[in-house]
Image (cartoon, rainbow over all chains, first blue to last red; front, side):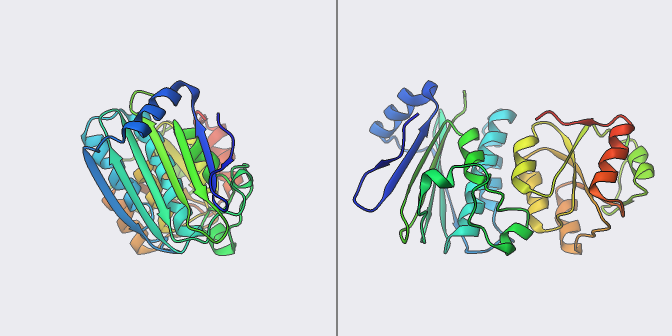
Length: 174
Length: 115
């Protein structure tokens, strides 16, 4: 497990890597291999009608590629929680899914307004969601912890007033 | 538990077309929080909830939901019923509360899903 480290003067960076995959994640990041399949979806601010479609499409694509049900479930849950986060908390953004031979790498990039304190946002039960989001059954402060639990590696870069990037890495053999 | 038994116990109404009364309901989970439902559903499960928005149906794209019971007399819109029908997802409504519905099903032997 790596702690929150400041990389630039303003942006904060958070990494959580399952120790069993630390070597594999580091190798993947240094090699930057090209993905076999890339899927891209726009995510609209407060678009709760369409949010989740991107994650469903990723799940269906992986299912067709023969990925097992338990890994599929973990990928779908982590991806869906992140997609909902962009919908509920940002001014919109996009989701890019890079399907490799051994893992899926999903990157969510939004237009801000950023996370003031990433460590605090990771605490189960902490939420900045408003009433509309809560009425829909979200905003329980379980989104990021749920992503962390279901992914092999989670990377967040953000700061107050800045865009947020959330990256999820899940190995098919995990 | 068979679907027909559940419908009798909850004095429920099925909202989606062509239900199979002999359908087997293996286990259940009850919550009004989407993240809870996502985190706790790891096998084919009946979900009891008071939420009736699009995202409840969207959940069935991510996890294995056998059927959804809307409690406290909540009725989803026609659009939601259509979304569920496309997904072959059974929708049921009951006037009973979440607590009473869960208690009746549990007493009749419907187990909690593995979490």
